Length: 541
Image 1 (cartoon, rainbow, N blue to C red):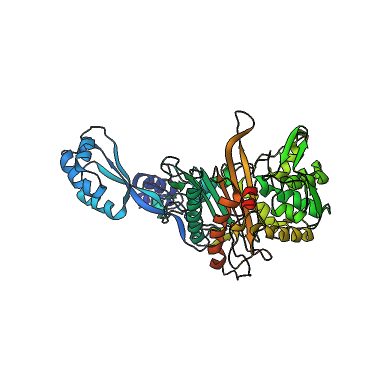
Image 2: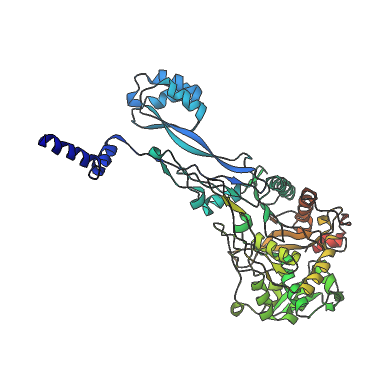
């Protein structure tokens, strides 16, 4: 009885307080934990349409040394893997011990491979990213490498969130990556890409950029970058998001910096008359307009509408170097946009201390300063928003695996241009998209448009000067002019003809003809496009 009592007490002890080490040892002997990779998070547009999805697939691996009959195995696998039997037979005949047959076999075909019960053939679950809309917004979305890690675009910027968190098989739980809804509108993105590609092909440009934004919220609704093959002429998505990475001299669209500061400081009014010379010498350099004219009086509004370099420089001289530089910085040039996009450039803005004596002539007309297309759009969105700068946004929110919606915090806007000066500037900009301005082709039937053209030379890094015959053509604007709902910019590199009013303005018009009704923006009247006069084509902007 005493011995039985001792045994009973020992059993109770082992099953109770002293049993945990043995239970752990037993689990280690019988349970194997395998890491289950989290499915990569999806990316959606603002309407909930999928732009990138993670689809479960299988990687098929073979050990040829275990296959008794490579030819027979190849014959059974070929229809399922989509490979010629002869090719598979050759691969399986090499005694390598490890051979990856495919990395993205659909689940339906994977089950058929398992049913073959071939020795040495195994399947490993994987995830495969699918873009339901093909190349739509490809430079913006970016991509992942073979290991499933984002290496460009939004896939790289939000790698930590999209990758999710791996789970363990014995828990039967694999927390997935989150869903990221963008501000991008897939329908508008498609239209923008098509219109931009057609414009680039027509102008035989090297590449093209187009962005559409809601200036009131900073939400980017479409962002497209395309390149043209010089040999075949085919226009395809760019290998990178040029809208944020390509730095260029903007030309006359940059004149809004000078005009906004001069109006705000009371240096000019829209009706101020300035005697504009035919040429303007500054420290040995000769500045002139894009068209020949004698010395003549022009109002500030005419100077902006006709994109007079001489008139703009004279206004900048009244403004002064320090005030001009301060306005350039206040409007965001030389600073990151806040999007955090991989490879995005803050632009190239020289400090005042390094300005040359001729900078007061070149900088106000958009030379000697490097910007991105997004920064130009930020400038125009600020003007469209009554002088209040609102940081741009590409991502609206994240959605957790449980479906919980987490809106990303919006950065507050801040006033850059006084409301009264901004209203005067908008009124002046309305004439640009009319027969008296440089971009009648930017007009949108039924709507008023405010905008500005830009035509700028491409620098030659070898000579320190400019490349003969090489230009950028830009048009940026917003509509309806007096109650702006949408702002957009179009930039082309090395177009033919060279003028922004001729190549980029028509693309802006086509985009807005779709976008304004698409968002239910009521017509405001006006906006009937007319063919440009020879002088307007020559001025170009």
